[in-house]
Length: 473
Ligand SMILES: Nc1ncnc2c1ncn2[C@@H]1O[C@H](COP(=O)(O)OP(=O)(O)O)[C@@H](O)[C@H]1O
Ligand SMILES: [Mg+2]
Figure 1 (tube, protein in one colour):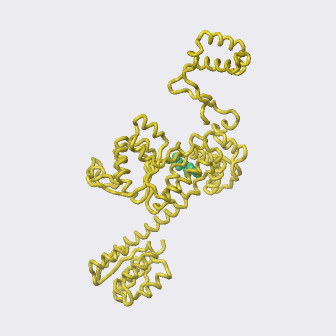
Figure 2 (tube, helix red, strand yellow):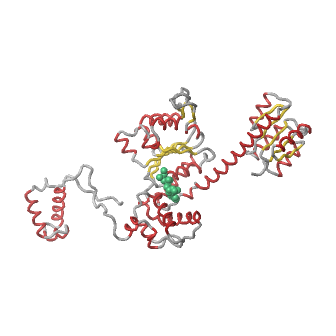
Figure 3 (spheres, helix red, strand yellow):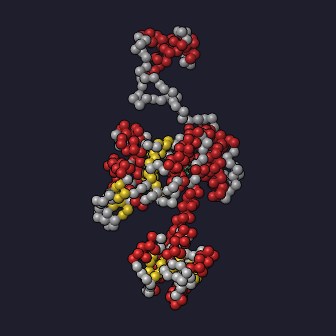
């Protein structure tokens, strides 16, 4: 690692020299400036990792310089040094963003410790900034692909949400439809991007653990609680918490979450004081919360509180038109990752990909493309690079599809048959030959059924349940 650079602005030569000599021995690069003007010059010319700043200078004050540098170099910590220590001076310096305020004469070991801590802070700040910048780039709206009208609608809505800074969002959708991606995009595109994004899967932990993960706990709250611990809501202060698979959150915790959403306050487990934090809550689920409310396994009030802004991510099979776009996107991404040069999916392979119903949605599509990269020849994706079950769907030998939906309570098959025969006869004005054709039956078959039908009264023979046609799937 490059040496860390420290600027010392100090008009007392003796202090300046002894300080810089010691710091150099510790392996730091040190520049000394004797007044405000040369301090400014040094600052303008190069990047420093730390500033040691005297309070009284011949041409200006340390406080003055502190204010100037704070806006231009927000990552650089400043340690103020003064021989005329006052409480007011210290408070003013801290308010202006000084890292520390040290009285002169200072103990050299104390100073070195402060320097080490301050530099560590700079390193962390820079690292966080770099990571966040990377995240912001990774989770821009342009990274959510889709030209399907439903997706466009969702993106337009979410952009509005981001602009208005709404506080609670519910994202529903099957696994792999992009719920996580959307939640991160909302966070990293909005005003909260500089604060943390935290993510927890509610189904992954037993109830007590989940509670202490979310709300934290006090020391001694339970057997293993040897120290106090902050929960996710506290750690994410100012940022966003994604509660994934919220449908699996146990009922008692749902009550606590509701209170937090309404009052923005909670207690740590075993705690007595209310802690207030401002966090944006995004809940995601692949279950049907409305049905769970009806079944009594999800709180009604929490559901309505979450559902203020509901977003339903469409399944991939509902937006097959986006498949070529997504395929090309993943091909480009894996080309970069595996240093390959695929053009894309060949026409036949693409057709197969478009015909497959994708129960695992975009995640499954991504995995299939990755697999094709591993198996393929690096030119284009061929049908033989696709898994057998996907190929079979696309090869004109489709897996059996449901024509009708069997009602949950079952159905009287004979009544269904009778009803259809009756409808066929009605439609053909009693012409049995034509009715038989409609039902793909022989004349004998229909004659037999008409006989049976005549044994019934017309009205009673109506099927009790009509069979709705299966929805597109
Ligand atoms: N619209 C999209 N455009 C590009 N990639 C997407 C899109 N939606 C999802 N993905 C990708 O698909 C995968 C699954 O998405 P994810 O957000 O984890 O789904 P979910 O949380 O709904 O299970 C991730 O790799 C994600 O980046
Ligand atoms: Mg997810």
